[in-house]
Length: 211
Image 1 (cartoon, one colour):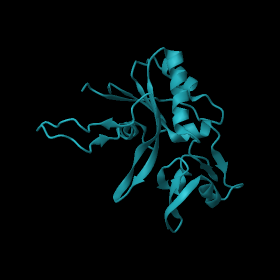
Image 2 (cartoon, one colour; image 1 turned 90 degrees about the vertical axis):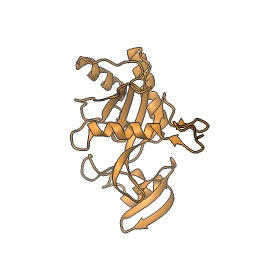
Image 3 (cartoon, rainbow, N blue to C red; image 1 turned 90 degrees about the horizontal axis):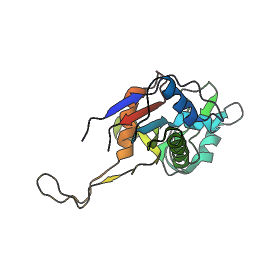
Image 4 (cartoon, rainbow, N blue to C red; image 1 turned 135 degrees about the vertical axis):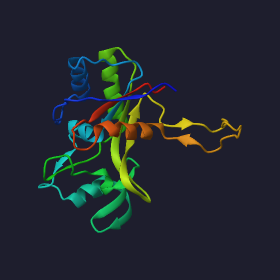
């Protein structure tokens, strides 16, 4: 295994509906004097993808509960104002993934309609502009059952296998592995959050050196 680097992409302006995230990112990297390399993995927060795709909703015009219903396939559990729901994408998360943080007051942000499609679009544009082969992971912050604290998970990807499958292989003691499947893109999303954080406005990072 080679050394892995996590590179924050700094200086991205506020994203609005209709903005071309790939072009903005490519221009920003060029202006910074950095370069895109083959096998770079771009990790992009869900918030800027949703903003660019017009998934922002005005809570003066929409009831928050109605937004949750519109995004929910199944209610798993409800306690007070907190709803654990299965979204139409298939994710199990709080309030169907609808967020009111890091956004203007009285606004809410829905998840992208198709995160994999969003990741593929970004990847295709970056590869065309740079001439490099890259991958893309779109991340969001989820809680975890029976664990305190949240971590970043992948909600969409392109150009990378989501799972590393060890079934049928052998460990260092020559025991055959029957159940080990590592959620690689979730590990990538979580690792990238270490340089993004929540208060320093870095919505994109590059993971470099991962096979």
